Image 1 (cartoon, rainbow, N blue to C red):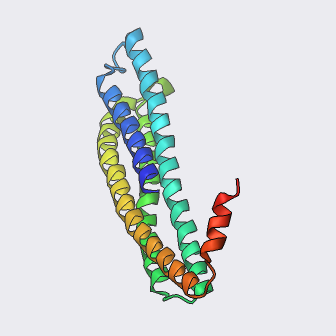
Image 2 (image 1 turned 45 degrees about the vertical axis):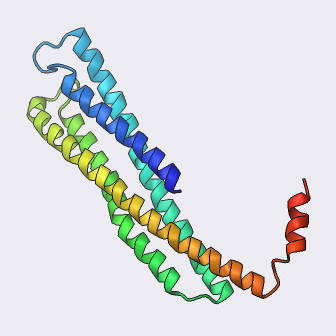
Image 3 (image 1 turned 180 degrees about the vertical axis):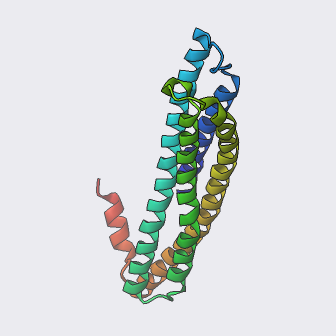
Length: 192
């Protein structure tokens, strides 16, 4: 999970930054926009939607990971009679990560809402008044979403260590009980 999270979060951040750069460089939409400005506004919107979907996807993967691994940890600890502190530690990491993941999702929704409010294509009056709010929201949003990914990365890495420890304890118990006989392992690995 640590490698895939880095890849997915990097892609989401690249899309967010690309949408921000496009928004800053597209030109003035409010005073007789040219065809080129309208074209780049469309590209900005589409990139923003792709970035939003990527952020929600990454945050959802993070939430799903913690739900699954904390449940796995609980079941394995109960099955093998291990110290329940691993379950408590995994649950603490999950609880620390969820608010940041939800915050990342809500932040991207807020940035999109501010962008929609500032879009002159809606035909609403005073959309230009929302442009600065959209810019501030986008800048703050990129930072907050980036930070939510950093928090998630650190917590996923810590949770990975907990899982590795549980796996090592299970392997030791299985060897002690003779459940992992070397001849069975060799036979299973030779079957195509």
